[in-house]
Length: 491
Image 1 (cartoon, rainbow, N blue to C red):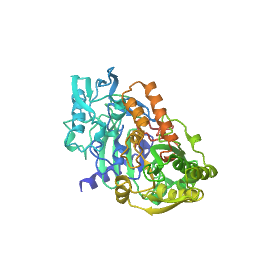
Image 2 (image 1 turned 60 degrees about the vertical axis):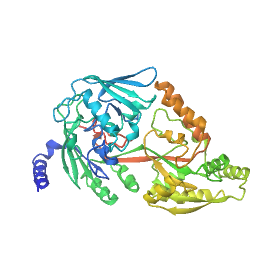
Image 3 (image 1 turned 120 degrees about the horizontal axis):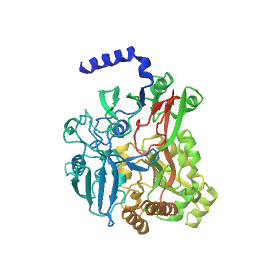
Image 4 (image 1 turned 90 degrees about the vertical axis):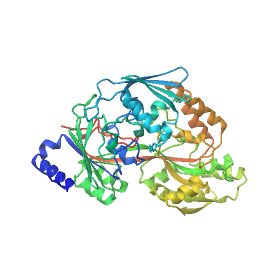
């Protein structure tokens, strides 16, 4: 009944003042509803979609291009040995309940995230913290067990936002942050409403209010956008309908990248894939654009290594593995497989895998590699492929940002074991200057491309359909967020 009253009141307000609300508000649709509203203890991507940068903020944050920029910390410094970070906080920051945000809240948030009983979905981000010390109300000192040049990056994740002890008890249903929007209402199964924070410490939001709606069904998504029931749909789930919106002057269609490197995973320890020539043959058998066109309706950016193309340190390695079936057959012959071989291709549920798997099977067949396809549900895939490493080939999108470090783990499911790559990653962890890190990241990208560890296919795309007057939406998704902080309407 409580929710019903609020719905009636909200509807009455909307009916009374449609013109006044039109330029000052936005209705955004996404597919999934958050299960709760605490990004520091829930793994669901949808939590960040609604709350990241809008309601909650961290010490650092992701910019639209994936760069790490200041958040609640106006600056930071690192000691020469890379073990001590000093974060200088913005002055005059308050939480939405009026309490002050200071160094004590940062210590509380980081200690809570790394505690033994923490339910944070990304505890690894905090595992290297040895100690958090309040130097003064606007200065926090963080000691690490070992150097980690990724630490400012780690602090930009939604799992690392700053929360307060005063409001943590009800955070899952009443999120209290420091951001430019204040949580107003959650009508479960329907919408979440945010209002502009008029006491915001930084550049205030242009929008006065925002409503997130949850529409999972692709047909319903198409109908809602076409009827202009929503102003924007982030992650539009029916790519086959995009040409219709692109041809309609009422709408704009934004096609961007996510952090999802979609790969043909190869079990590097399973013969014959323990032979680099065979992996190289697989790489040349693949026609990336045919997979993107056939499985993704043309959405996706080809990649030649495990790195997001929108990132400033991306290295274009596509020239290393062009589609060349003749070369693939010659490499197989050189490896002793002139007559080809048969292997398994185990596919999880997403359409990129199921649709893409059929196309890749055909491309591999053309060079003499036969695949036995098995369609698995996620739980089966986790058990057979990820945990037990019982596979030859698979297809999966790795959606964690900046996750090239997985190639330094020989026990990871594709079982790549290269000491020289691990040495580069060790050096990267100990390097804090941007130029040095960039050079090492490029070296890492080159090594795995030259080793043909996996079949690097494409960066998973994200499509946004919005009314033509909406400005400032992210095109790419360096993290799973619908950042409304710079969004406005034309006119």
